[in-house]
Length: 337
Image (cartoon, rainbow, N blue to C red):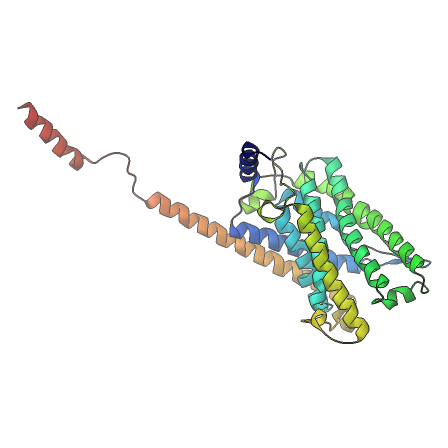
């Protein structure tokens, strides 16, 4: 790439980069955590169906993450949504696996970011249809490859036992699970709601946080930090997720508690208090999440008001005072004399 092309690329990157304040980033993060975390709790409430050996259920509501990433900054939505699943869903329900949860967080964050960047125009039905499907594909394919690797190296014998010890049967089960997740979470609870919601929310959520709606002419660019390639970032995230998953599977097979179970929290409140606790957890998550969101919004508004007040109170250097002009008149009169 020539020097003029590098300069043009830098200017374009500076022009298209969303400049967000710390409060705006935090509001997007908290909103994504709350809505996606509550959605994950509701997904646990939806009963699963059993069709022979196949279990049909809702993995997650992908439309929540896709709509937020299509309207707001996809990076902060991608960081917040899977974090909300860990904080507002797993921890509140008493089913937090500890450090091993980093694998799922990395896979979901990468999937949401890519899906959000694919939506250049939040009013485009075609883009909104494909974004949740791409999200499910990235999430499930990366997780499936890691699951296959665990079975292939022999550190996940339970997966083979569930498929009569046949590796081919395990691969078929992974393929069926991927297909069902695309249909249920990617289309039924992904593409269809996103196609209806995003155009109607476009231009309505952003002003609440002091943001401008996404400009289709300057959409977010699918790049990593400091302009690095998204493929490099995605590859690094996949390697990190695979390392965490392989270590966790090895420690479980060896029957030892190591780094993968660090900070694990597993009292399982649903078994102790019944399914009604799911609704209690969802209500608590909503109250906490939106409480923090509106608190940040109020603090941001107060800070902006204080800045405006101080700028208005500052003296204006526009017109000189009469006292300053009198010496000038006196001097000119003496010169004429």
